[in-house]
Image 1 (cartoon, rainbow, N blue to C red):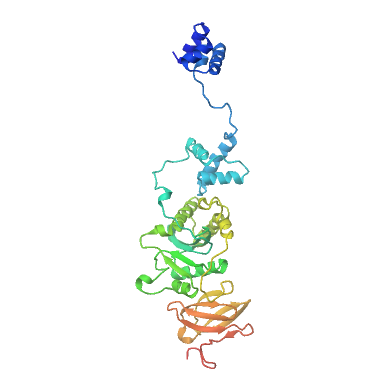
Image 2 (cartoon, helix red, strand yellow):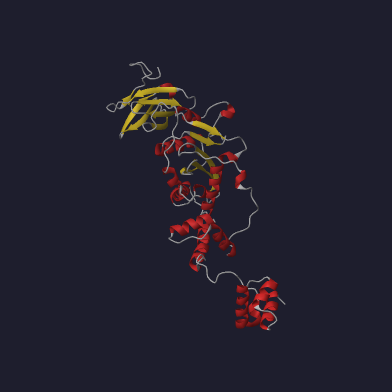
Length: 392
């Protein structure tokens, strides 16, 4: 028999007064009167311990929110998008609903059987993390493999801003070449300005230092005073952000029909890039999108450059059989005389407000310099003496 039953029966039988029972059993008089009231109402069963949980909770998750959490999890997973509790809370907030705590969302997903237990991972505190302080301080680049519907292998080349995780470029190639790296890099510079540095692995499309040489990409970086950083061999953690990004990209692509052609895949990549930059909250950015983070801080730029980063253009080209390249300015095509002996060479033309400098991408040699004259269609090589044929 429980203690409460014993003391109540002694009081109702007249063996003890309430005061005496309180002293003997160490129970407050207030609680004894409460027990007596429960005895008069429900008998001895009323003396059994009762739950202390409140009859109602203003913080309780409503059925509407609970159902919406489950639906969001299923829909986001089916679309190949991040569907974790943090992301679900962000979507609830965007829809005008008051999201419960992250732990509550996780508990609801567990109860619905929508979370698969995973092996324990290293705690995040054990990792050494770095992040650029400004947009354009460091751009990471890498490419990953994918397959078209017919099984043919393609490669997807990406450029990612380290600070904001903004996806600057995402293009499909078969396969990625050094020319593709230079072309996409210059296209990013045209749109976003030059970065202060780049971070890549040691693939041949990024560096030729393992063969004690330079490739086209390295000459472009040197010409623009951009610092090149390369991760240690067999240590992909250095490029951890873009390695993790590839998982997000492939999960999104896997949720859609495999493209049959390169242009069809490129259309999917363009759609993904827009969604990733503008509509997807990033957990590493405290729920902000990459676009919001990229535009919130002034951009970095190369240091020590003689050129104003806001006033030059880049043109990647080959010298024609006539020893010239073409250059468009203010809607008009101009022809630059490089020299017959340079025919077929890969070059980079850098133009500021007054001058165009042409650099040989294989050697880094300056092949020609040209003074900009909007009134003339032909701009001669000022390194040559007037009246002499280019290349003579």
